[in-house]
Image (cartoon, rainbow, N blue to C red; front, side, top):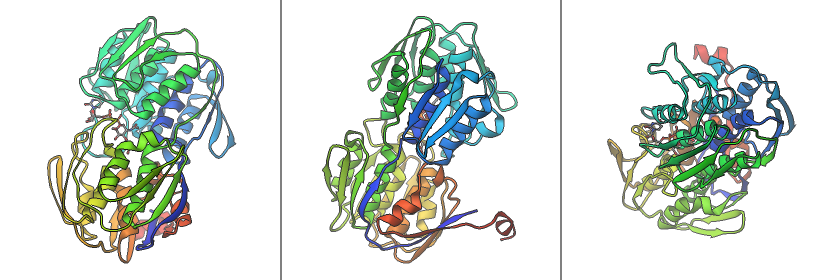
Length: 428
Ligand code: EPU
């Protein structure tokens, strides 16, 4: 029941360092299970979802040694069970990667249906279709909330995905790297974290080619060896700070990024009037003057990422005219707009389309983080608003933003985290 209290209106200035990519990390940690030797993974973000993944590995029997705050050694050789504890799997969406990884390691996996952020139906039929194509048996109907997948022997095959799915692409990749023969994934997702997972697998001796394009070819190998691997920087964490700079008329250097991964975000912020300078592993975002209205359509990579949609919406809500956002990935990702209305946002939503009528300023208010990126949007709005905002349900935000309060404070935000003891919260 903790919350963030933000006194809005400060111009953010200075340098912020981005952590490792959540959505790469949440696949790379389970991928370690496929190795016959220990691995050292660095640039792990300090977020609750990463901690849950490490807890799952430990519960499966892996030995974990923390080297420093973002590096761990993981020895998967002692893992002997293929069942992920229900209570851990339910805590996050990405627990589904343990299905592919355990199936690849043992030919058997038992994982509870994943939890995670709620923004519409989140099926995993394409994951299961991929496992089936590799020869696994998967449940026609889920019973007791568990998914069981098993195979005597996984055999490479061609798989065409009906939708572009990050999760299904990575999950099939995990199951296929040690399958017998060749697997071809068509209509694969091209996100940077798909490429990062493939690079990690290759660093352990896998033979994965074409990641980053829509056709991925995997030649199965028998063994994977240990590796040292550093996770790529988080595209969406970086994008969120870029949005914070624009919202507050600020000037931020955002370090430890891959500017190429930020191009679709930068392009829209430039349209809104921001000045963006790229360096090798940093971008500078400066904002002077009004935010220009524009239209955004979310698309799979290299399009504008859906995970930046709510944060971008706050900017357009402050734009100098009418803007339209079309959400093409998720069915129900505009729920947060009701929360933003409390702060003065004027918008109408019709299905996958939201129309924003720009207002000159937002006013602080008590709001809730309805999911991770919705929570990030509340933060962008709170930083820009006049007056004080309190954001509740911040456990969603802390699933994906490391040291958010500390990082924002260091660049000039007036922000604190208020911890309410559970007993007090229950009686509030
Ligand atoms: N879909 C299906 N069937 C499937 C899988 C997906 O129909 O079997 C549909 C979904 O309903 C959705 C679309 O395909 O309409 C894309 O879903 P995808 O599988 O790509 O999403 P995901 O893998 O579950 C990951 C990220 C999300 C991000 C999406 C889209 C992780 C752990 N999560 O989810 O990130 O929004 O890709 O880029 O990698 C976040 O970080 O806040 C977050 C929600």
